[in-house]
View 1 (cartoon, chains in turn cyan, orange, blue, purple):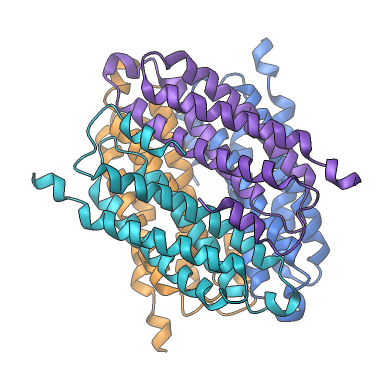
View 2: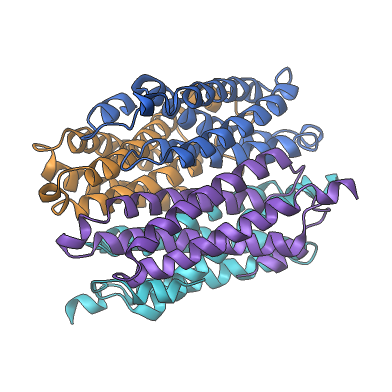
Length: 141
Length: 141
Length: 141
Length: 141
């Protein structure tokens, strides 16, 4: 995935955002969105007795996929960058990733897709929090 | 748009969310997302001298369209509802709608699409804030 | 939803697309996407014995929501319009709407959300086919 | 990106789809969507004289990002798989990737982001066509 190449080729400055943290966060959002879409569908294909315990997991997966997709898109745009919007989306994304990781974690022993998805959510949550920590620091510089 | 019919037919309770405020907010998010996608494209079709003043408007429109779309989706799901996720997305949505309304407002005298889009953003911002105000109130009941 | 106002305010010509059919098709795509997202979630909240019969319905709803959302976005952009892309998306959208209407139709007697969603899918399928029928006609003129 | 792990952990069969071609196509769709979102924004940040030549490039990038995102989502769902829907989306995706690669190719000598994006579009177009070629072959088996 050419995220780093695309970020490097951007023709203006990035408004004080750390380039490596930005690239990592976009990559984790994109990976987490795909894992959550897959996990929701894998849950739907489990046998009847498992499926009825996975309602909340499917729902949280769907929310997490949508929020991660949108966060990746907002982070991929830097033209006249608005720190308030970016920060609010990163916070929403860290919140839903944490919630989805908790829920998938409850089923990780029984379902491999939930185990893999939990890890993707945890990595994405961490990447969002690291990027929030770095936001604005460049602005004062 | 059968938002109210769909919300009414939901087979479980809505976790203390006000039904009318929810329907209104979904409708405004969906309308705002479409207006922003249209406005971004209309900006791209303006003559050269206008286009170069509309970079930020296009960018904010694209962010606003994505965030409103995702907010409408999260709000359309009630199964094992997570108030933290909903609240974080509503706050991100109100933030980007306010930002996009401000930016479109700067061009509203020159471009009808910006004038219409500014109004859609303001209505959506208000609907998000009203729904945030009502969240959780049902939980204590 | 200010779809007609946004389409009317577009600063260039629409590349031979019928304005009324375009507005109607955007409106139906947006309405169908929301109904499908809601219906998928309502299915997830049905009692156990119903849920296990609704796997395919949830899956088709999710596909239909994504395809309708993207079709509405492509249709909302007219700048240097590409008839091949528009036509291919309209065909994909009519296909998934027909498939989702059939599946929701199988559950319409038992679940009001499936009945309302089936109707939204049928309207959207028809709007897509009418717009396909009108495409290119303007180009020869 | 754990696409292969997620596909491997799917609890049912994949309806005759080639597993490796599926994984590759999801990966290319996701990468292409991100590259196109980035390229659209990079175009918006080019100097005035370049920006006015990039209208069509921005527009095609936005369409391509939306269609690739939706294609990745449809491909990530296998529950009661519908070959007609998958095929129609793959065809729409190959069409828009080809169109976007052509347009970015026109600017590849002047803008590095267009050069990288053109390559992502070509890879995605090829992956879609290979998957179309393999669809249904398994069904007869």
